[in-house]
Image 1 (cartoon, rainbow, N blue to C red):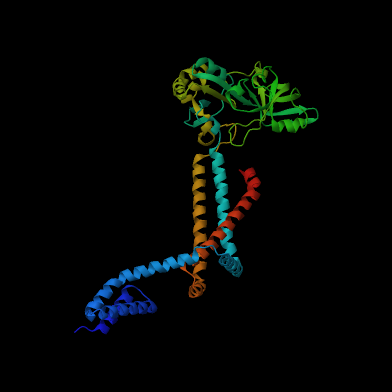
Image 2: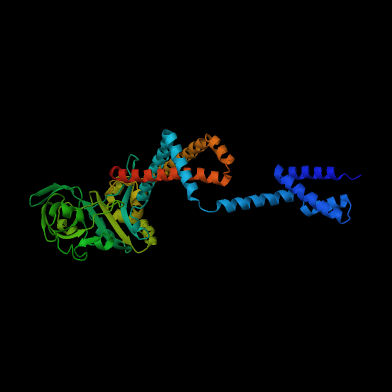
Length: 452
């Protein structure tokens, strides 16, 4: 025989278990079920039919639980979706209180991440600077001529220097060469202007077409005429300030005493913008090669620190030119080839000289691409370790505040509110680390630049 009370009791138990309802919610649903059953019985139906109909109208236990869950979420969203300044002020007060309570712990966390970020920023600046060397010449067909040799004892050598007459000879012998320019740095000459006397390390003799072949911007003077006379010199803006200060340097005469050329006088015909740090070129004075044309030591026999550059028609010309270097060497430096197991010339693209060339006697010390890779990997490792350390310490600190979390839940705080509070605290700590790192980078940049 059908027992209505037992059926209702079993229904409530099942709904409360599968729907995960609280006692009050289950009691409310039971009252609704009883009212519906009474109404159906009053219409002449049996208690069993009335119970089955009412239960099917209300729905299964899972459906009831799902609908109640959605209703709760919607209600919570309606309550918390609006910006509440009072709540934000409360979060800020709690954060400041926690920071003061664990002052040493928090400063260790923030400063640790800040130092890691600072190191990574410096590594990034250094790596990007090294990779930017002579990028303005990427895609051009300008090359430096070097020589490679194996001595009679089997020692391999690469040298960026060469004989004095090689530049003009390359222009005459190879139709692929559109322009050739030589750079010959004088050995510690003494430069005098009135009472200003200095020993300079970057006084360089060049061919007159240097400004046509390379991008060295002139501040004063015409690039087509600065070397129209033999004893002409173009100086950097740094040297113009050093020797002439507020005077106009154009037309001024400076005295030179050094090697090569011994004692000479030069007229300043132009001022070029000081070279950037990210170029392998290094000079402060550019004097015309014409001033030492008749000097007695200009021969093929001596390979000096003279850097020869050529501009070619296209990339294919470089390979064709290198294949003909053997005959060129036989013609001009046959004795040097005979005294060694091997000797030949080669070409290096200007844009890759700083990081990829290992030739000796460069105009400026070269970098190392393998070292850049190691430095970058080290920077990534430092960043990962700093972030992992920051996250671990932050999570450990949050775990110690479980009592606070429990109290907030009892007082009605939702999960998203608690998550927002802790994420905000971590975000503010991260921003503090970024600010400290930015200040450290700004303060230490001059020292870092002087070191690197």
